[in-house]
Image 1 (cartoon, rainbow, N blue to C red):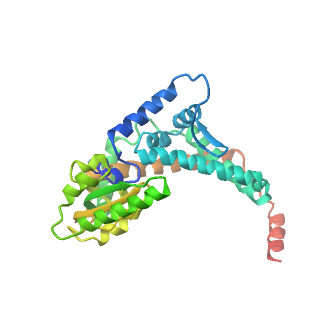
Image 2: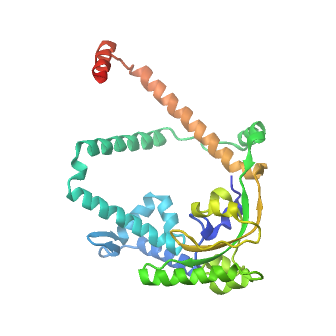
Image 3: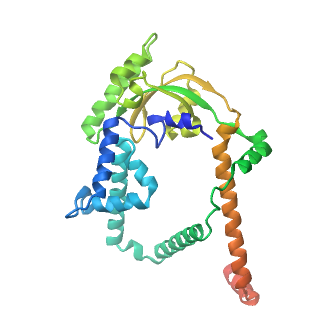
Length: 313
């Protein structure tokens, strides 16, 4: 149950929100727009040995997967890490297939089970759509009134950070780690001006101009690496560099708020998700009940009993 304002401010402290610079976002947007144009030949945008991703293929992936498109339009780290993840996965699959791993009976069975689960899930989602506009505002408000005694906002933290990205080159990464360690030492000294250091040293363009301030962030919106850390910090305290997939974060806790009863605006998103999930479950159970009624399941209990005895041997 994070508010819109809160999620917009999470920047690099959150897994999927923020950008190191407007320039990166513009490059990502231009890149996707370029993908939309007809191409005379396939153009690889990333390779890893024999594994490759072409611009046309990435365009198709982004069209089929909104989550992937959001990552491509996000931060520079998210943009590049998405390509790396796809390439690494393909390289591992290629190596496994070259050794016949996918032909093993136990692996083939797991693949078939996963395939069937995907078919069932996607088919039911398409065959049983939620009613348009569900849930309505009256249903949301009624649910809030019925459940507000158990609805609470999570811990929230007013944070500032200094972010240093992690270069791909190992030597450069070691240099960057030494740099961010020195920055953290300076930021933690008595009387240090954290805001001035953030403006001078941070690579997160979304927050550096504000002295590193990220605003109020709900605990679930934080990077997993930071959740336990901020709980331990005292107001005004500065952390050592915290590594993440993006780079390193030097975090300052300005203020924290414990869980509190959620007002309607903060609870609304969670209520909508819960009502939708409940209705989806009801629709699917109704579909299954109708299917079983139409085509009853018959079990040979004698054969099943014999089989159970065989299992016990």
